[in-house]
Image (cartoon, rainbow, N blue to C red; front, side, top):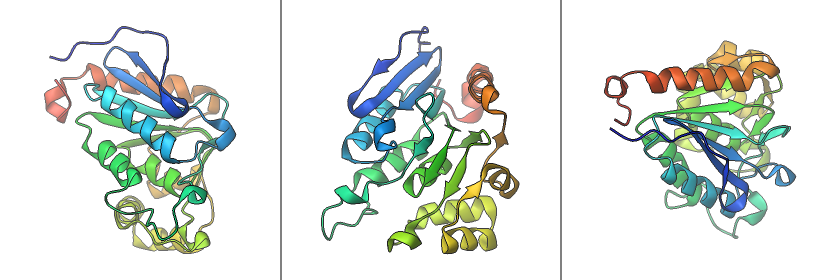
Length: 218
C-alpha cells in the first residue's frame, strides 16, 4: 500500500510548477501567471516532473496558482521551431497528455479563469473537470492555422457530442462555464469561493475509497 504523504509546504519545481501533498492527494500547480501559464518547454518539463513525482497519488488535482485569471493559455506557438509539428507524438505536449491519461489514479482539473487551445485540451484530458463561473474554454486551432489534435477532438466529441464539438472547433468561440457544463465538458460549476474546498473535498473522498475498486494506486 503506498504511504500517505503528510500535509507539507508547497514544493516549487522548475518553470513555476509546484507540488503539494495532503495524504494520498497531490496538487500540481501552474504558477507562471506572467506567461499566462502557457505550455512552453520549461512548463511542460515542470509538469511532467510533477506528474512523475506524484505517480503514487490516488488523486491528482491540476490547478493554476491562486488569483490567476488565465488557467492555461495553451501551447506556446512562439517557441515552436519552424517546421516542427506541435502535435508530434514524440513531442513534450503529447508526452504530458499521455502522463495524464496513464496515471493510475484520478486526475481532476480545477479551473479558475480561461483555458485556451492546448490548455483547454489539457483540462479536459483530466478524468474530472471542476470549474467556477470565471472559466471559459476555447478550442483555437482554427484561428491559428494549426491542425486539430485527433485525440483531443475525439475526447470533446465523446463528452459533448459531434455537433457541439464541430461547432466549438469550427468557430473557436469561447464557451462559458455554464454552457460547458451543459454540454458535459465540466462535471461541476461551483461558486468561485467554493471551488478549492469543493474540489479538495471530492479528492479526499475519492482517495479514501478502496483504491483497487477504481483501478487506483494501492
